[in-house]
Image 1: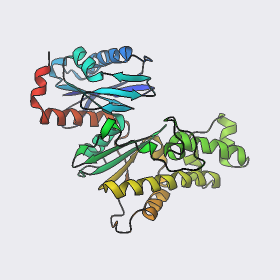
Image 2: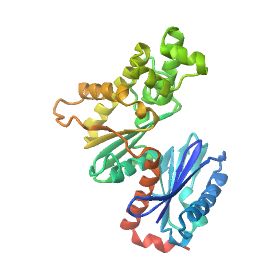
Image 3: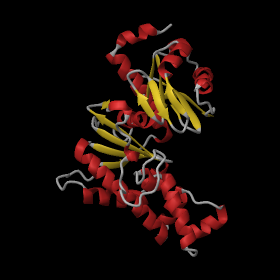
Image 4: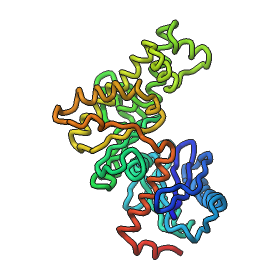
Length: 327
């Protein structure tokens, strides 16, 4: 039995997952604001109690816990080097949570966790070489080779959202650079371009939506594109162009069996996937015969929790003696 915490800037999604990948209980709570992480880590203990009550599982049956965090993670030590949305810097998460819960704890970037989940039980099942993108406020990525996460030096592997796609006249990114993929193809980027188009084209469906709601979301843009709104279609094409360029370039280096696209923006369906697949093959090497490389994720918000269970299982299998650390 594995205890899993998928930590975001807004919510913590927690779950108890068995060795077959089945979620026995899950709970979501608002993330406490705490740059030192103390309040957030205390929430883990409270969530464990809630999940154990829901599932009827005793805490003593939990073999290990895993934590997914949006940020740079040193997997070997379980330290979060930097998590911008949480305000964390050099937080020894694995050490502190293990002391609190009395079980081995493993820490990973949240997008890497989602990638493991999709490989194990989702759209990448059966593919040991996998690239997984989570398109939300930003663009997260996970790279799996031979069934294992590629973490890279400083935990930077898979930071696909910061692949620079627009060298000239790029928009500023939260990382401090300009022209990163997530400034052109994330849900927040699609919303930004949607609002700009709504003001530019006052007779468009986007303009109507802006008048009604006072704001534009990526979902609004996708729905307008599905209704053949010209401005919305151009925005989705724009996002697909840069995604296709980035994925084709990355494919040249890693050559995964599957590229799995998840997150809120991926729910746009054909309005995103049709132009994305077109531009991917336009930029990729002509030798690629498999036309079904790019597929939508299927696990939704559960991908991270399931992947974190897989992380715990893999670490316990490779280092069985690690369970001796349990109090």
